[in-house]
Length: 366
Image (tube, rainbow, N blue to C red; front, side):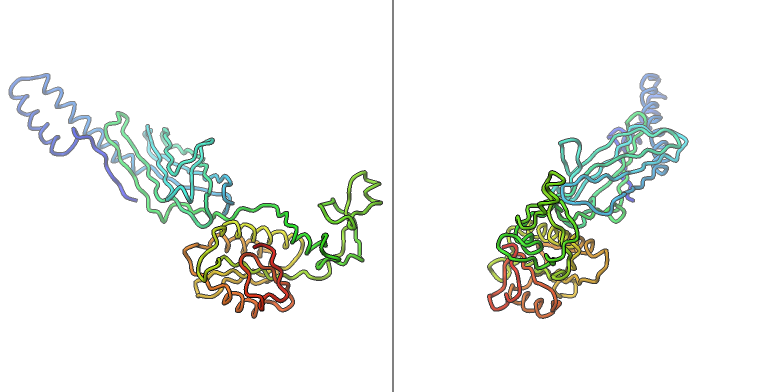
């Protein structure tokens, strides 16, 4: 913690020394009004100094967050507890918080958004106050406040002490890509069979295990008898038996060897949506991303069968940095296809490889 004292000109040490000299001169010269004025200035400076020196050491703060991550544009609430340990009240306390950039985190107040937030409060003796700070993430990644300071003033607002805290002690917020419900015809076709396919790659259409809500499947999937009984469209629910292992290849590199796609954020969000959709359907997913890890290897999230697989995918996608290291498209696909699970079906998102590497791969997003 850094302590900065904000003192008006009249309380500057040189001015106070001059006040003492003038006080002595006017007292010997017999000017009672001037003696009173200089005495008053010195008294206020001394009382203000003693009050602030005692009070600023009695102010502490802490924070609480009940969610470890949030999606882009979703509201986050952080709770700051400011406590006065002193036997004297503190008036006109001010809390200033600042984020690094409006492109990372913004504080929200109704429809207003800003990278800075100021909060005024009074703290009675031996009291604690909880302040709710509302903010939202604007971009993916781990974002942190760049500055937090508490300003303590004396009751007469003559002087102030500004307490500035180290950035390492400030809260960090994990902002993950937007998550939305996927409505992709290619993926629907692959999983359920749709128009251009004669059968599903994922379900055994000879084994009906029940019915479900109709979700724009082809007409052959409608269970007409059950629909007539329930007076609403119901679809057949099939046994899932095969085609349940997928390797997803996300290529963020554009036409040139090292030119990133302009729709990089959209591709990341789409990839997260595909993974969510497949995992919710009971599929197993491994993810390959054309992005270099800290060990200078291609980013790969193996299908380990863990229930936390989706969380690992979302967290990894949140940390992809456009200023990071990427590989040429053909190098990425040649290496990742060679090492992918031989039983899985490959799904390409982004720019595809050259034709000779596209065997048994389905390009679901250009």
